[in-house]
Length: 183
Image 1 (cartoon, rainbow, N blue to C red):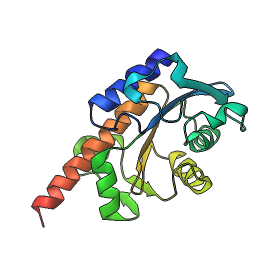
Image 2 (cartoon, helix red, strand yellow; image 1 turned 180 degrees about the vertical axis):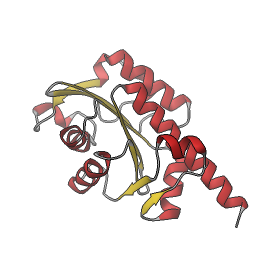
Image 3 (cartoon, one colour; image 1 turned 180 degrees about the horizontal axis):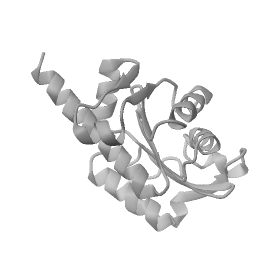
């Protein structure tokens, strides 16, 4: 499974959806999850950069797991997600800063069809507030943007969460450019 996480990490970096050492990826395996280690370079992931932690409570390996482990845990406990991709998509972050709160309505047909309104949630990185807010909106949405921080997308498999991540960024880029030209 670490090879799939590594493959998605490379695609995120190559696509400009994260800078190498930011963002994180996880996959649920029953009452455990595999998640990238804190500070890992997503385009250089090996088996040693993936940590297995508990889904239902904290464990000793949380200290080396991603700083967003608490958030991933809350999402798994409140949604049907099997995979989560957290990226720092530049247009999505920019649009969250411009919008403030609420949601972003995609203008492109794919974004409207696959995502609908994209919620913007509040909360500091790795905080209980962020964990609660994301778990709540992702129970009814495929993806969300954390204000000023990045995107979280869920899926039944990693590729699905990755596709929703790319769709958010595409829709936010289209909306940003459209809004820029129509001011």
